[in-house]
Image (cartoon, rainbow, N blue to C red):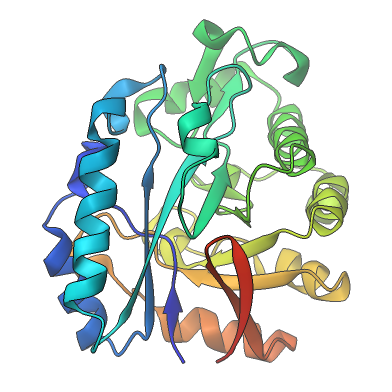
Length: 272
């Protein structure tokens, strides 16, 4: 079966197309289980996410689509939540959804992770608008801060899936230090929290031109018996299922044969 659990809608203000166009594209790609996980609202970076007063609109649209297409495809309802302590909405963290994806998109400009609450000093490291910030910091420190944030996210026990585990590589700025060593503590926390990592094809559309996470990190996750799921992180209908077969084959090559989906925050295992 084909699974794609991380996809967006135009409510996030940086995606295109109608919900039905995404679903029709998923059906055409022979995807069996398709999840919408749009960017959750919060009082930060509002131009890249839905507002709180659009939550009911979003959830109702997905539920209506789920019913309309129930004989053709299984639709799941979720949110992608930016892990920013003090800024996340309780309404979203306690929402009646199938799963929550936890992601890190922001880092402190010049301070340690402990000061992440000073949100005016955060920068969106995967946003081309702020690519110049990479010149202002040590690349190893940037990677260490990022994976410290992933570790803290896992330890929060708020989420089901880790979104694009090594997103920090998006512009192909790689650390001098061993990536596996940098990521190890975060993977230990992910395992302890019983979270799932998504293997996402979105990185194949980015300057880094490789899946999230890298093959070496997927191999490490497999060694640690960390479960996986799949995602295309589509922001346009034509991105739905993008190179899904490629990342499924990569997972099989490493040794995986099952992936995880969630219904009502409960795991189910799917052969792929």
